[in-house]
Amino acid sequence: MSYTAIKDYEDLFALLKQYAEGCNESGEAAKKTFHPNALVNGDPAEGFFKAVDKAGKTEATARIDILDVAGNVACARVVMENWHGMNFVDFHQLMKVDNEWKIVSKVYKAYKN
Image (cartoon, rainbow, N blue to C red; front, side, top):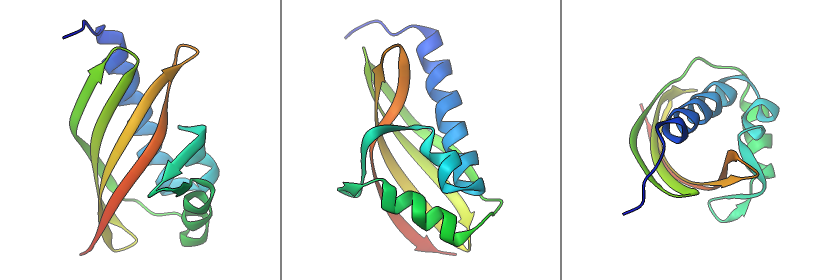
């Protein structure tokens, strides 16, 4: 087991909060939390950003259920509720690149309210 600084946890929580707020705002706002080569459900993340833009603004709530960190990599489970009438369970893989955490991949499952 490796040591992980508290600052890394704080940075990851802040990034995931920024991700959730971005998803409520616009694709461009959400995009800031992703690595340029990120994938969403195995496809380039650009399609996800376009879907967020198409859906428009909303006021979903989110929580982080799981956060596990090992050095410069991490995984997180984020639950988002009432995003345009849908609930989501997201699994994020994150990586610290150039001293900054970014989402490198995301897979999700959607549920109707």
